[in-house]
Image 1 (spheres, helix red, strand yellow):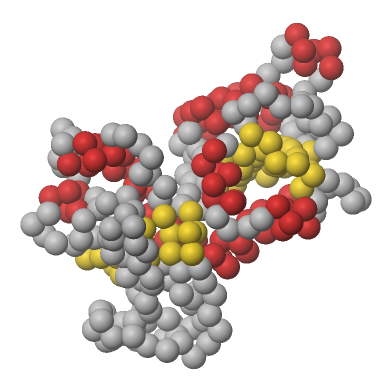
Image 2 (cartoon, rainbow, N blue to C red):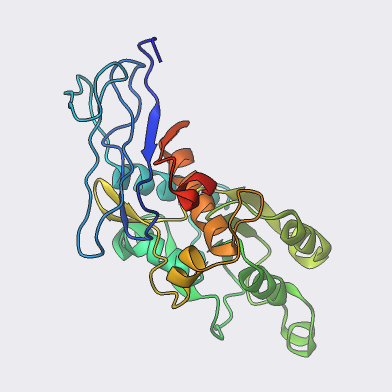
Length: 280
């Protein structure tokens, strides 16, 4: 790019689900910031981000003249906005129940603590996958991955049964739905079909936070716990860009949420001889 405007640079040398780099700062002006370099690392190490100017080589660094904001700061701000936007719609000085699934709990734990949640009037954090006590006098905020299991459990909270017909739903008459990434159309249709839930929903939003901020300038996709990840990547029958595996699609979706959080449109570099990198 011959202009002075900067781009996000993503370099994929070997798509291991380990640590990746994150930008040191948001855009303050088109010339203050540079690309984000995304490189693979060994499982035991963390790659730190380095901003470089659009007209300099990939290895040269530049000093930012404006105030910087780390990726963790950006994520903390996004989560704080989620809580603030929700609690601001409640009358008076009311508290809210935060319901999370395992992945969103890890996202929250990697960036903010319980004290920060209490500052935003979160009374308790509940696990969506477990049986929960009722809080019928409080609103509920769901922060979950956009997958079938999490959406089904949310709908089950508001689907009438013998218990709810006698005592009512688990929570009050206000619900906020936030998803870490893109909500598929079929899952959105399932939510729309649950009338008891729909009439209570005040906010439904995709927050683009489907990654962990392990350090101030580093993020992690948290995919290494899957026993099938290496066969899925390297021994899979999915070998073309039009036919990628669910694991590869998940990697792509997670990287998209990083770019969206940083407000970056990426320039992607990869070794042309690596078919897997080319497909991703």
